[in-house]
Length: 143
Image (cartoon, rainbow, N blue to C red):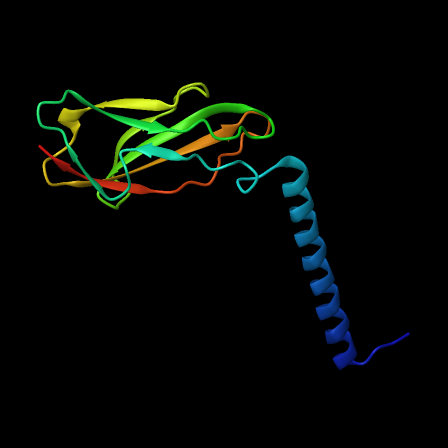
């Protein structure tokens, strides 16, 4: 069957749409079968509290704590802990504690008086190697 030019355009557009829908369905299926960051539980932070002021006068370190939230489906491989100076991407501390560690001690001399810092923690699923989503908490330092 011979189609006119307008009909050829419609067939091409429909074919393209069907291809895009099939690709999207495949991507969703892969996320469901193999896990993604939306299936790995978020880490619950304990301290320092969000938007708090931390007095480091005379202290050698600042301890960051998070809770042992539910493990990912494949088990928890490790955590990713980061501290940023201010609200930027200027990483001050980056550590990967093992999956059984729920705190990190950071020397107080790394922090400046009056400066705001942000921190976050993610957990990694050992089966899919996928990281959890994260929240970012901030605190201000007093020395």
